[in-house]
Length: 127
Image (cartoon, rainbow, N blue to C red):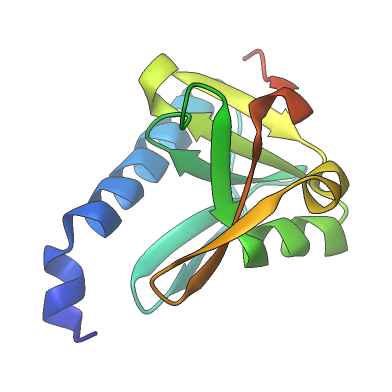
């Protein structure tokens, strides 16, 4: 995909805006990021001292969230939790990546392998 096509992709732009929004909320609550993780399509994850942050617009069927396989395995290797911001209900959920790896199903989104799991594997992160 060419860069101009990527910039026009509403799904990618929307996902990046959600991550930007989630990062701002965390910053307002005293959480400071270490670095942004990105690929040719842009930022897909934010690393914090104790967790990795990703975002979903909503929980599919009310209780399913997803993230790139790479993010979940990176969190496991770094011994950090995964935090998913769900914009629909303005809530952050925290997960142990081991739990996701042990109880998920996969799908491809373009060239990305995604892990999908039930939101009940984690708990709400109270800010």
